[in-house]
Length: 254
Ligand code: NDP
Image (tube, rainbow, N blue to C red):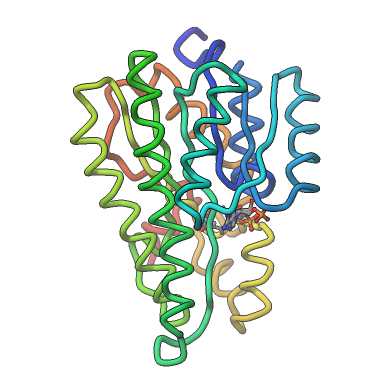
């Protein structure tokens, strides 16, 4: 299927060393892309690269803390140095602090915003000239159900993920003329390290997710594979500024 062929594409995936980010990397690699995995944990980075390479794709990793804007810019430059170009960026790395709003410190609020939102802006800005050089690109931002809903236990996270949707629309408007499409994916409740933590911290969360989901199950990272390839490929060339839930129907079910 030529429409979904990513041969010749280079994808940089923040937080690509586990969970949803690694699922994006594997799916894009299977469609033919070269993949740069970015994360803080070098062991996880190396294991992710091995998994992606085992699919027959070229992959490498870079150790980066995306709360540092200079490091985000360096990450883009290193990717281009390694693979000669960059045309797919997945702003996926994310974190959460789970407390009632009255108990959250300004430092905690800033950490979540810088990790989940500011880094996506800075990295997209750094990737823009590289995408111009190759005649276009694809930016995929990872939102959340909390891009749509509020959550008493997660106000900084919800603020950052609401912001991701608006950032996505704004980049889409600004860069459509440059053949750069920017879309967001809004995962439902997916079984990853992040939500294993959430289930320990939020009593009753596991059961609530099951009873509220029409599909009756938690998602797994690989549930994102099809959307990942679609949004990275020619198949989505007329789709931009959209936020696509990959949630088993969670956001449409009452
Ligand atoms: P994981 O905890 O498995 O992945 C989080 C990733 O982000 C890790 O690869 C981690 O790398 C990276 N990361 C976190 N902070 C930084 C940082 N400062 N610098 C560089 N990398 C960082 O969770 P998920 O796969 O679940 O999360 C991926 C994305 O999906 C996040 O944006 C999350 O908000 C979003 N999401 C997840 C949902 C779910 O149900 N799981 C639902 C909705 C959205 P390292 O370990 O090396 O630091």
